[in-house]
Image: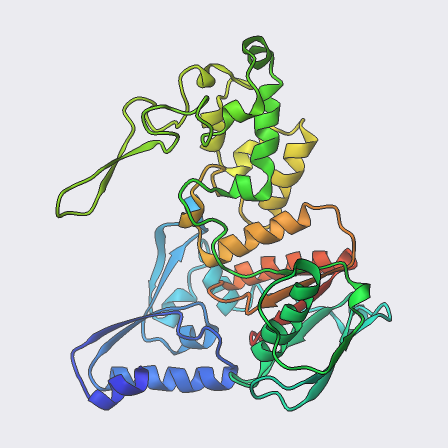
Amino acid sequence: RLATQIGSQLTGVLYVIDEPSIGLHQRDNIRLINSLKALRDLGNTVIVVEHDRETMETADYIVDLGPGAGEHGGRVVKAGTLKELLTEKKDSLTAAYLRDEREIPVRPKDKLRKSNGSVLTLQGASGNNLKDIDVKFPLGLFICITGVSGSGKSSLINDTLYRILGKRFYRLSDQPLPYRSINGIELIDKVVDVDQSPIGRTPRSNPSTYVGVFTAIRDLFSQLPESKMRGYKAGRFSFNVQEGRCPACEGDGMRKIEMSFLPDVYVKCEVCNGKRYSAATLDVRYKGKTIADVLDMTVEDALALFEDIPAINRRLRTMNEVGLGYLRLGQSSTTLSGGEAQRVKLATELSKVATGKTLYILDEPTTGLHFEDIRILLDLLQRLVDKGNTVLIVEHNLDV
């Protein structure tokens, strides 16, 4: 597409490009930057949304948003040239990484893990452009699969290895690409593909439901004296169940008004005032908070509220540790970015009781992530490996 635009020799055009470096090897990244410069030199304006260091250092003008994510962000921290951005010492995490004051830590060579001796061996992989290759994956380690774009990484891991294991553990229907044999499957008990796909397709799904903490919260509310007196069960506190939700908006908190010939308009439900529940359900309170108040709380605030309830606290603490303390428990899953969805999935895995025999596969997990997010992600993955699991990453990022 870029080649087409450069070839058209148009001038005076505003190009908006979102994360063009996704999936590119460092070699290809420099070619991409040169293409963007060529577009600019034709007399156009190029706006790039990007976390890539080389792109930032090449840009004529940078707008840095922050200082944090979610509720902690949404402000212009600094706007100007690279030189001007580097002078921002207070709020800009981006500037701190570009000045090398903060960095993503690399494990010293003497601290690198030794394999536990177990090996998963894939032989004769020949799908797409793979040349009948044999690959050994030492288990219990952090493994990175790298190479230039189109070299066969995804064919080997996603289309061959993951499909073989998925067929074995979950009876997935996708056929793996051609291979001769695989040895060592008995050494792992499950395979988990942690990608950036949405954790829920409908506005009703939310992070607390996915992680499993909302089930524990509903159980707690059903054990309160007021609930027992009224005969309320845990289902009463779900906005998907008829008995406890607001009858007017059916637990959505919003009413859809259909407009002829115009897009539908959503307005706050006038009966429950956006709280999703019936008045009777909202009479039950824990430490002065209704179930609707809890859903409107951030993970950070909920941690303090439920500090005495281990089943809830453990999952909330994991979400906070993965850098998602700013998310609201009832926030719609459809509003989460790819990186946030990925971290919710990792938080779910970390909060489970470890077997130490799981294989985690991540395809380019740093896509769309800032330096600070990559640091948090790598820390999470190292924790999974510390529990005895194997993490297999397909990646170009040099920090990984």
